[in-house]
Amino acid sequence: MGDRKSEQAGLLAELKALRRRVRTERHAYWFPLVLFGLLTCASVPFYVLPGRPGAGFRPGRPALPILGGWPGVTVQGFAGYYWLAALLGGLLLTLLWYRRNAGRVGLATPARGYVVTTAVLTVLALVIPPLSQVRSPRRLSWLQHLHVLWPGDLVLRGTFPFVIIAAGLWVLAWAERSRALTVIAAVYTATALLASLYDIENVLFRLGWHSSGSDLDLTSLPNVLLPALVLLAAGAGAFAGQRRHRTST
View (cartoon, rainbow, N blue to C red):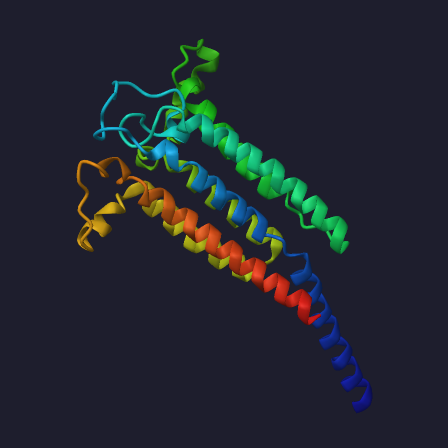
């Protein structure tokens, strides 16, 4: 009886070890981390304003106010269109990546929820502003109440796409069953909210950086580069860990 129990315990331990090994082998989340980190870096030119902040500002909401912030104040006018293309294009590349990884390791990650969540949030950010302004008949009067979904101060600096990326990471962490990605999602969410609600250059001012006329147009870049750095560092760490695991096995 004792030998049977010890044998069962050994088999159970081996099964748990095999499950952990397969789950680790399936992890491929370093790619979307690095991808969206690079896409964030590529958005930097849209946050460099020629001249003083506020130059060229016109009252009224821009064409893509949730995705693109306020042109002439913190971003240039095409930032929203860039993020629309970057988010949807990044999702397509991520979906193709996970399909390729599933074919390689023989086990698929249920990444569809991540793709759907991020895509839906992106589309909502695109359609809520115009729909809330529509003069609709009484049977469609609910459209005029869509303004309650407006994310408020989160959109002013043109960094709400970071919040969308953060929401997707939470869903991906659940799909990957990864504690490490859960921690990354928590850190990135805090960074995305900070970049959306606070001028991070104020921290640099306290550390001794004083912007002059030549670099005044760069003061919004810390709000972009800090989230990008979190994604790139996390993606590089995840890639190194995945490669180390494959080498050891």
